[in-house]
Image (cartoon, rainbow, N blue to C red; front, side, top):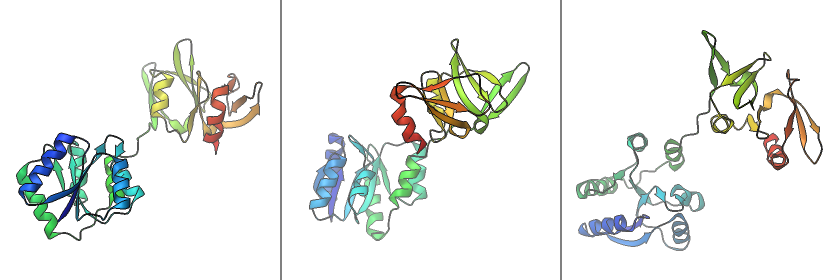
Length: 245
């Protein structure tokens, strides 16, 4: 059996190699990075089995498979938390939790020998381990003795004024928020919201017009808002154009 170990922690890689040698398995390659993995698989015969760490020094090991088609079986070595391990189980993928136990290794090898034709859907596994970010869909505001729920689709823009941050709704009302614009930029969906300058984050759906302004800048006019002058800062113009595509 030909085996490759891809592991960026050298002590962990050497320990795994010693454990494999106890089962009379020779490791034909110890690789430490995504780059090494890509180069190796492009120029060397592929092994029967790969022991693969997920998080390598230069990125996720899945990136290797985006560059090279590999048919080898895979046993993952991971220090991921319980949530991630559930993803492995759901995909019927074998894994070894670090630090690797000899008995667990023996069991994984036996499982590999029984199921050498099993295929791993790396794209599904990658998606489970790296779920799409969840952006805010609504804000709950305190208005006197009441709570008001505002969906993000009904928010024309966010802006800062007098050390406060406000959201402006389609009802032409402004409400104070306990968020900074920096925090809002990280929780809003970037497909629809864009920070045009230090003062404003705007909603794509509420843009009424974009007018050429001085010094290669633009002025954005939003539906239902006439009291605010929104100018795209010069350093944001290029990104703004890309965002509109």
